[in-house]
Structure formats: structure tokens, C-alpha cells
Length: 408
Length: 127
Image 1 (cartoon, helix red, strand yellow):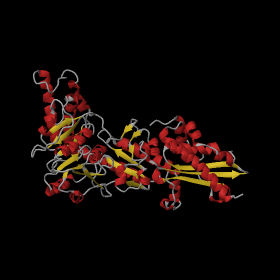
Image 2 (spheres, chains in turn purple, cyan; image 1 turned 180 degrees about the vertical axis):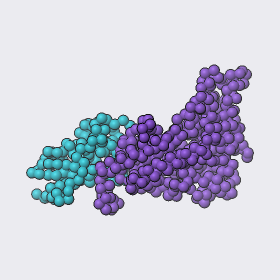
Image 3 (cartoon, helix red, strand yellow; image 1 turned 30 degrees about the vertical axis):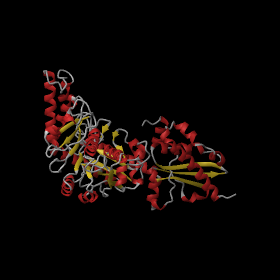
Image 4 (tube, chains in turn green, purple; image 1 turned 135 degrees about the vertical axis):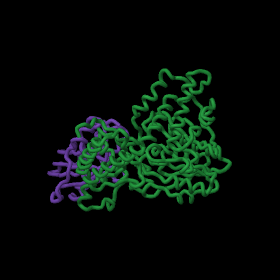
């Protein structure tokens, strides 16, 4: 483990490093080729437009769509907002009911909550213990007023992959007019996904989760049959009127390249990441008792491991792992004092939710880094358990649930 | 979030970690406060001789600031009379460790742990 360089980044669900090949693609659009893609009357504009159109095809191709169906945005938060608010607004005569899941990203949850305050009916489905929702759960919640169902492809905390193909088929069988929106941010480029196989109408994407730059995202909007949404940003009528504003040409060119690389290398990369993840998982669990993986292990992103280390509070463990960038579902890592709402929705008890760590393995992680992390995690958990009164009680055979605690 | 040097020092080199042996029970008072579901549990023990806290030990499940608060608390109360220890305020811990506002509850828990340990000892030794 000599060649490990610190700090180690193992938080690839939060963001990813820009691939050098992506950066190389972007650079000319900051300098010589700085034109506005909407300038129709000179070569600067034409060059920029050509780059944007090429990127459209690259991004659409990653998910089996057509380049004309891509609407560029500032990122996936905007894409999710535009998809759900735009559809709810356009379809308000058809109905006012939205279905989503408690474990969705905040940009979906909070969008739905706002619409709820504005008069929409929203159903938040509780997933199974493994984090998955079934097609039956979705169709059971559908009414003739349901205009949008929003379900993520893969979860950002626990990495579980929803069966969007089965869910999409069930939605359309029940009501072809109900739109199916997929937050594809964590899954696209990591696992096979096709908009037609999923019968999707809208798909949100982000560049910086797939080794592209921050600040650019996309909303894929189906053209056949045509899906219509109201815009949230009005102006020059860019992006078929759905999202006005001058396009971020360098970022878009980078997004295109990142998507093309992801498409090309996904199969091999998934195998490599899954094997690193297994090495990490086995390395930790072989040496530490009382660890629990959160979410389905079978339907999971190859680079994700979300694991609870019973009797060790998450933030104190993050402190010990200070040279390794990972994240925790513990309340103490945020200002909210509430543990992860995703783990809660799975029915993971608060006491275990406070002990969870999310590892996100990505393109640039190495086997040597995994081995370093295993050793550090094992050493740190052992040390913190020696400090933990709960671990001592557990060793003495005391059930911590039998104690009358005083919540504070 | 950045931790103060003092929090880091107590976290990395916690003072007085441990548990008193069961046969020392008569002289020992134990305070167990917090809840696993809230993400912090402190157990603080005092060993009393001639009305003074001769020794103290702790174990804490919680964030770095919680560990540091309880570690510091054991240092502070050693050598004090029970009445002196009962007067320790969480604000002294906040000041000593430079705790930020979101971590003040850690110091409150440490104060509660001291009081609970004293109470437990007094229950065993009614006047």
C-alpha cells in the first residue's frame, strides 16, 4: 500500500473528478471558439452550435434517445424542477396528482412538496426495506388524476437501482397519459439504461456525476409521442422554448464527451468498480462484526457501498477517516440533527442510521486505495468501539433496546 | 466542519476512557445519558473517596465533540467535591473546547452525565 496518495476521494456520488479527456474537449471553447451557439450569422456562432449539437447526440445516445430531445439546464436540480413543475403546470387540466418515493433526491422531494402547498396531491411511496419500489406499489397509488410519476433510476445514498423498465410498463398499461419522469443522475453512464425500454417521458441527467463538469445538466424530453411541459425560465426561446438562456458551450461540450466516454467504457468500468466494491465490502466485514449493508445488495450501483457500523457514531468515524473523503448518514454531519431520511424510509432504526457511512467508488480509485481504506476503517471502528458504552453493553449481552433512554 | 485543536486532541487522545470494575461498585456513581437514536450516549463514572472524586472514567458513543466533551468533563471533576462537580456548567465546556453552536448539545449532555453520576452515587449513600 505504498503508492497511495492522500487524501483519497471515495465520495463519487457527490461529484466526480473531470476526466482529463473531457477537460481537453472543453478547453478550446473557453478560448478560440468562444462563440454564442445562438449566433446564426458568423462562424463563431456556427462552431459553437456544431459543438452543442454534437453533444446533444452524445448525451442522448447514452440513454437511447434522440439528440433533438435534449434540453440543456444548469444541472439535475433544475432538470428535476423543470420536469415535475413543468409537467404539473402544463397538465393541470388533466389532473393534479403526483406520485414519487420518500427516498428521492431533495430536488424531487422539495419540488413535490412545493406543488403540494400549491394545491397538487402528492403521494410519497415508502419503499421496501431493500429500498426498492415495485410496479404494483406505483400503480396502486395511481388515480385518473395522476399526471406525473417521478422515480429515480439509482439512489444517491444507498445506490439501489429501481426496476424502471417494469415500473414504466406498469404505469403506461394503467394510464398512457400519465408521464413517467426518471431522475437518472446517479445511474446514467454507470448501468445500462434506455429511455424506450423504461417507457420514460422525461429523464434528468447531470454531467458532474459522470466525470464531466459541474454546472450543466440536461432534461431529456420525449418527442414521439410529444411530451409538453411549461418552461420555468422565459427569455429568448432557446431549447425549443423549454429553457431560455445562452448555452454554456464549454460545459455542454464537456458533458457530451463525458457521456460518450461513459457509453464506451461503461461495461468494463462497471466490472472493475463492482470488484473494487466487493473487495471493500469483504475486507471490512471479514474483520468487523456487527456491520450492516443498507439497501439491496443485488440491485445496486457497482461503485456504491452504504454500511452501518453498529455502536460507532458516523461523524466520529468520519473524523477518524480524515484522509478519506466519504460521507455519513448521521445527523451530526448536517445541521438538521435528523439522520438520513433515506435510511429512515427503509425502516433502518435511527440508532443504526447514525452509524452509516457511504462509500462511492469511482473511475479514478485504485485497488491500493481500497486496501488502505479497509485498514483505516477497521482500525478506526475498533478504536471507537473501545470508546463506546453501547459496544461494551453489547459485549456484556445487554440489549440496548431494553434500556429506558432519555431522548434529548 | 472544522474542529478546534482542543476537540481534536481529546478525540485523538481521550482521557480517562474505561469502566470501573464491578467490585468497586460501592464507591462508584454512574451516569448514563443520551439515546442511541439521537446519535449520542455518554456514560460517565465517578469514584468517590472521602467526599471527593478520586477518579473518573467515561465511554461515549457520539460525534467527536461529544467524545471531547465527556473526556474533558472527567478531567475537570477529578479532585473536586461532589458539590463542586455538581456546579459545573456546560458553558465552561463550550468555552474550553470552542464548540460551535450546533455542538452545544454535546456539552449539555456532559453536564447531565456529571449530575447523573453524582445522583447515582448519592442514591447508594443516603445521608
